[in-house]
Image (cartoon, rainbow, N blue to C red):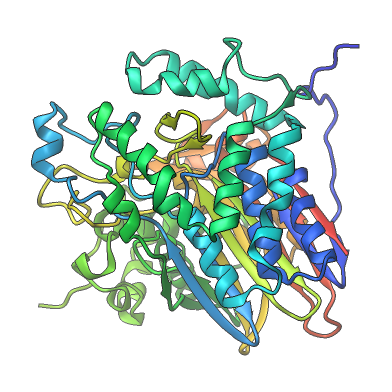
Length: 535
């Protein structure tokens, strides 16, 4: 019998998930199972996060891969830690070199937007510092999935088809291996169809046996180097060999009695913190849902234009993180929010999209982890014989030398992927995240305000209809966004555009721990194939 995996005539309803000994929430059920398998083998939340992340490179290749970047926020032994595993631009990636190849802006696909991938090194760094089980054990579930195959889930099928259509429009010969690996029969695999990735499995084995060094040195690095030389790319084995993830201090802001934490720039979590900081300074929300939505949209817009103007490598930013989060600056920005929609402009505080997963264990440890190839499959570059599909993070670089995020050798670009974490009174509340390119800070604002202002459980917060600011006064809304609210926002000057589907409005996961009884409560994204597994 032929069944349509994308047709649901009746509204679905998912309940919040509870557990006490451990929990894994992510966008693909088989990925969540990999993490839960590790928890039940005696691993901690960090081990489970690594296993889930590795499995997701297999079962959701449309969003991430072995050539991804990654960020993590880890709560362990009563302290918060941040990891930035976004890779820099290659040494040869100068403005002059890219412009000499005929580009006025960074290309979206091909070899040029590829920066050093950080995900395998992130797994190894997290395991070495905080893991309990042997690193090779953590990748075993992913290797098994890649070797034996798995049924493709509905959202992955849809994103696969979209990528195939996009890459078909390119005549770049460097993209040919993508078709050989991901569309060998000239089409995307259908929902429910078994897909195996033997090259991917062999590379995962090499990563497992070498604690990821095989990716950055030796044969795999040589293959990457040779492919990029053949196709006019700039990435070299020396760039790979030099890479190390960076441990960082998370940055935060106070909101409704809680502390909301993000990774500092080059990550864009600062945008969400600015927006929440403005809303905090506007005071408690009233009962008018239109006023509430209007304020949240306006604060997000103001945070976003600052972020797009200033966020890059932290030491290359003009205004500092501290200046952009300063009380007087956020009060000034919040003061711009009035009755009518703004056409937002960036401020000046100087005086004078991905897979997301959350894990928790019975010992109180929790992980917020995000990993991404950026736009769909990323650059469209797959290194033959390795299963390595590479991100296109360099696409975010500017070729304007005066821009804060101008391309430079060894520089990390503005990054959309942002893991979030919530604490209260110095204790962990839990990890949260909403993947989806430039939707992510907006998703963070919407999920946090739903939980802390409207007191919704994680699942109910993720179920809420979403909006997405795109530019100027334009705000896109989901198909099921209430018409009366859309019309009321339009009367305030917002240009409301109703989208025909929900795929571009982010895909989130949340796990919260009850401070009174220690029980875990999780929610997963209704807009994708997500799952929360509890133990």
